[in-house]
Length: 181
Image 1 (cartoon, helix red, strand yellow):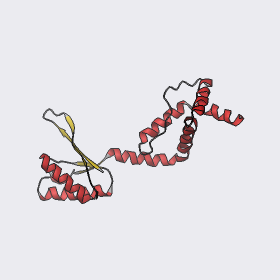
Image 2: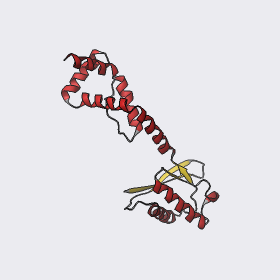
Image 3: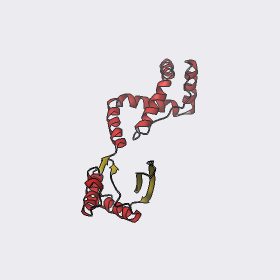
Image 4: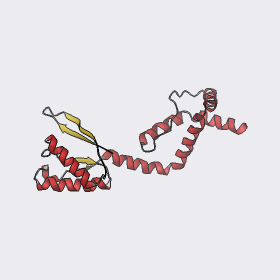
């Protein structure tokens, strides 16, 4: 695996800055202890170990144990600002993704049908041509190509759905044509 360290800080002019400090290969095991030791080593190497205020992590259990280890080590050395009160910050993007994924489960049957419909019209050139004719027949103005989502990226599911909605009349027309033939 890999580990990426990004520092977010406010500079002297009160401008928010983000810098990737390191992107490195990280050999197993990926336990909380090995991650914490790697991070402490890097922080010391960069001279930021006394400047750490908080760390944002997703909800992986190894991250929970890693932050516990980091916090206790920094508190022992009295290097943690504000006594560590704000040290562990849950990653809001990860939390939002989990919420959306749960919501998508509710409409799972519909998503499956839409994915199958997109696969059906894009699997062969002859079907793509037939779908193009259906699009023209219903005067569909959609210009963006249909595409499948990446199921771990909810924003790609949104893109897939919003594009499929633009082609709805063409899908209905194709279904009617398929029933007749």
